[in-house]
Every structure is written in structure tokens, then in C-alpha cells.
Image (cartoon, rainbow, N blue to C red; front, side, top):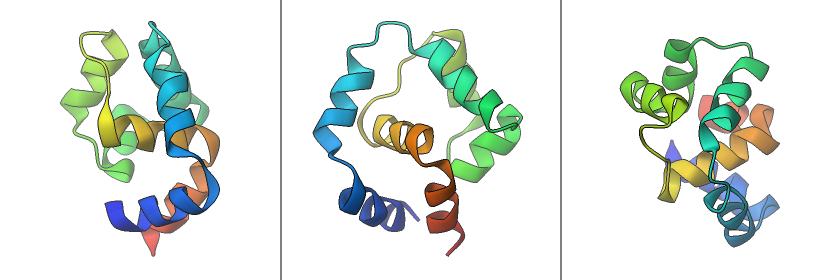
Length: 91
């Protein structure tokens, strides 16, 4: 599943630019919460659809933890191209 997403990602978006954009935003929790709400998904559905644990998503939304590495990249991709991510994960 992750490999399919990364193939789509590498074709369309520069990994380093996206990581830098989110990494230096000191207040990610509203971004993650807004992203989930924009997609009209509950925490449970968002977590299941994109491969995160519900507990991790809750930590991110509360600001207890900050996503990094592949999770950060995936969140950026979901933010920019949610339908492409969903298509890649469904294939």
C-alpha cells in the first residue's frame, strides 16, 4: 500500500519541498484536524482509510505528537491530492 502511494507521489510532487513546508509549521494539529474535516471523515475512518492508528491521529490532532518521516509525507500528499491517494490505496 505505501509503495503504491509513494510511486504516485514521486511522479507528481517533490518530497523535500513538502517535508519542509510542514516540518517548519509549529502548529500542525489544526492542519491535520482541518484536513480530516475537509474530507468529511471521522477519526476512525480517516485512520483506517490512510493507514494511521486512531491513537496516533488523536495525538496529532491534540498536538501531543508531531508527524514526521513517511507519515508527514503522506499527510502532505493527502492534503494536496486526496483523491489520488485514495485511488492509489484502492488499487
